[in-house]
Structure formats: structure tokens, C-alpha cells
Length: 477
Image 1: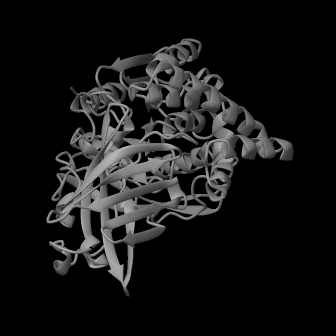
Image 2 (image 1 turned 120 degrees about the horizontal axis):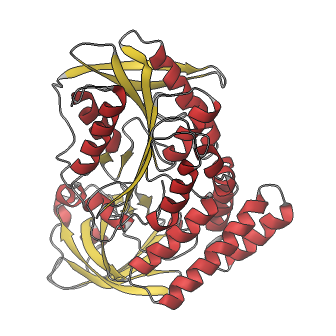
């Protein structure tokens, strides 16, 4: 699930991407430096609310003009373009319009150091940048859990059809080598355009999970969401959780017809928003044998987002007054968004509220488009509990104790209540200590940690899931 900060300064890291020039590695020792002296890769750290957030500027010169990209590698692998560059003598200004950010710095004489400040929406923080090697700066942390071929199981590239929506989805089916027909699971990812590996911040969550489960004798189907990778259709946020449930149901039916799969031993594992989708599949489309839920919301989306943002601000060490103000602003925006998809007056109120947050017109419009998208409108108002209360198959719901996106304190109680009211008769809700929203071991659970943690999925989670599934389908322990 994406972290929806909406209009609030949390933490941004900058990165500029230029081809590093060999001629730009040494700054002039006297006089004002030429523009070429600023070409290269620059790295520094912003201190925000007790967090250290790495910023990288990678600047290039094209036809005499300085350009670049901005990245926050601790927060996202996706870069943002630098919208304006100005050089005056030994000073440089970089503007990142997409986030309303600006860096101004001075190139110190005889040193590869830029000393200055980063500002965003009225807040200014000191920032010192040092020239660094581009490849080293942009290389992500090691991902030791990512499996590499050859694999001790079969890997098949497959397609299947969602006939209800007339689209074809593409994925990967992994099959244990020995025996068969095999029990199987369909993996359902979280929000945002998600590929078959559920790849976020360089972590391939579903690649690691599929590898582990298949080695345990469980076939796994993971697939590109509609509109992503090799799958047809229109992607998030035009598609809703209800549409994703139809896609997942088509995946289940594909497995039911597969000769290597035991049709009566197919289950679902949904992460984050996927934990909303999985119950919908079973209750409204194609029944399955069991359901695993990872960090699944059990209350309406507006409540999830309100607590998500407040908890994130608090975890950054910001004062209680800031947390309360943030919660109030978020609540007002979410209330307006719940009405804005159908009421023009509500959209106007939403525009007014966003404009007060110091955003540009373009940023305001982007926020309105997001907040009134089909996905967002569904997510804000959908209550998972009535669907959860219909489940009549075994359910395992896991949460991480330091998850700041789907907070266990908010969601475990309603999840347990709904499952206790269901005809399942075999439902377990557990909180796993020290794990974040991605089920990584984490110090605070802040999303800024995701990319820097080497572990993709905690081994304890992998073992808990595989042991539980094996127990449901009768595989020997």
C-alpha cells in the first residue's frame, strides 16, 4: 500500500541524474567556477524530525544547459526531474517543481563540496553535498533473499483471461518438481501499479515469497496487475479493488483448470490492499480453500489513511501539536474527497483546502485527480468487515508490530471481531514483533527505512505462512 501523505512536508530526498563528466571531477581552485564544475553526482543527508534521509543530485550538461533528475533513494526508486537550474558564480540553485522543493548551495573553493540548504513549502533545512561516484551512490542495497536460477522447481510464463472485463493478464506460475497435483496460492499485491513480483524500493516481495512456498511444495501464481507489465487493461488508480478482485478470481479459475494443480486446494495470499481484494474474491466470485492476509485493512480506507499519516508524523519525532494539526488537516481532506467524486461543490472545497497547503496549481490538480480517482473513491468508503464476516474458510491474518501504514492497533481488533462473527471456525490474527508494513525487521517502521533494509521478507513470516498453508492442505510437516 502506498503511503498517502497528501499535502504535508514529511521528508524528501533529492537526486540528480547526469552522465558524470571526467572533466567535472575537480573544481577550479581560483576565480568563479564554470558551470561544468557542478556536473557530476552529489550526495548529502537531510535531517528531518530525527530521520536521516539521503539525497543525491546527479547533474548533467546537455548542449550547454545544466539538467538533472532528483531522487530520494531512501523513499522511492523513482526519480523526479529538476525543473530549473541557475548558476551564479560559485552558487547553484536547483528547483524541483514536482514537490515544491529547492536547493541552493555554494561550491567551496578547492573542495568538491556544496554547502547550502533545501527548502520545501516554507521549511528550510541545512544540506551539505559532497561529490561522489555515480554508480556507487545510485546502487541500491543488497537484496540477499532474491533467488537466482537455476531453481529447484519449474517456472512457467502464463496468461489467463478475465472474461468479465475482457482482458488478458500475464504472470509466472512456479510448480514443485516432484509429485502433483499440487496445492497452490494466488498472490495479490498492494496498491499502486504492481508487477508480478510486487516490487517496491528494490524489494521483490512476491519473488521471494513464491520461491519459498514453491520449495515447500506449494505452487504459486503471481501476475502483473491490469495495465502493468505484460497485462492488458487500465492500471491503478483508474481500477478499483473490486476490479482487482475480478482479476484475481480469473487467476483462481486458471489454476482450477490446470492439470498440475489440485483444484480443491487453492488459496489466496493478499498483502495490504490485496488483503481487501482476497476476501472479495472468495465472497463474491470464486470460492477458495484458505486465505492468508498480510497487513490487511479491516476498517474503511479513510480511517486507515488518517491513522497512517498521524503515526508517520509522530514516528518522525515531530511534536504532538504537529501530529494533531496533521490529523485535523488530513481528516478534512478525506471528508471532502469522499464527496468530491460526485459533487462539484465538494471538489471546489477540496481545491481550496489543498491550496492552503502551499502547493502549486499543478500540484493541487494532481492531488484532486488522485483523491477523486475511481480507486481512491472506492478505497475511502469500502468497509472490509461485512465481507470478512462472510468468510467460511480458514484465515490467517498477520500484522507487523511497527507497521505505520496499516496500524495493528487500529486493524487487529476489527479483524478479529469480523472473523469471530464469520462461519470460518478457523481464523487466527497475529501481530509479529518488530516488523514493518513490508514484514521486514525495522527500527521504527517508517517508510523511509524500506529501501535501506536488506531483508525483503522476514524469515519468520515465510515460515509461518508456509507451515500454515501446508497444514491446511495436508502436506506432511
